[in-house]
Length: 248
View 1 (cartoon, rainbow, N blue to C red):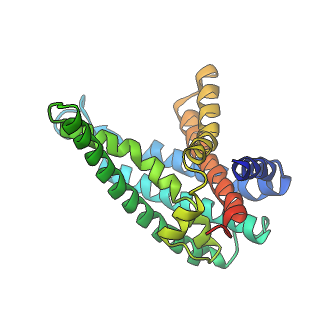
View 2 (view 1 turned 30 degrees about the vertical axis):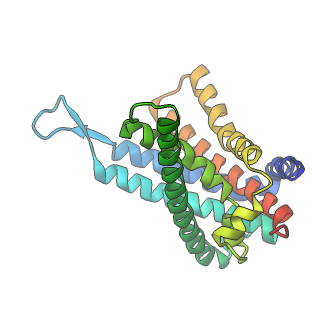
């Protein structure tokens, strides 16, 4: 538990530094503004061609938004970790290591997500099947298996979170090593990680709820909170990796 609390303390100290805000705040603000304007001119819902009173989802607008958002998330996460690992906060957005590290990060993330989905599906199906046999229950509907699978995905993904800073640092980011590095955390790691990730989102939600603003301002703050959450997660993973990287 001590490495988790110490990493959390280091993360909060990182965000208390002026150099960090000078480096990252303009990018977070600019990206949030760009995505907000993008949604304003290319809304997710558009009038149906046959009935102007019926709105349908625009897959191109949604796809474009998600593509830009995914690129921003990867860039912000990688740049945050590079700033921590190599102590180059002011140069984090111009380092030549970024493109290569971002590609490795994206590859490791999709591998981790695939493994998480697979493990979650197996555990969900196996658990519900065992409950059905042992308690002589009727077969569970497929929706129950899908729902339980989605609920388990965050656990297995967080348990692999040490793979992400490892790939940015240029170390071994294999599944086995990542799983071993998080073996002492388990449930506490997941709880602390989720608290870190949800903190800025909850704060902005309360701010928007008690201080009603226009749609564009609400969208801006929502995107900004998401990117700030991404930075917090990246910093927490990086500091935790520094403390546990020799345990595997």
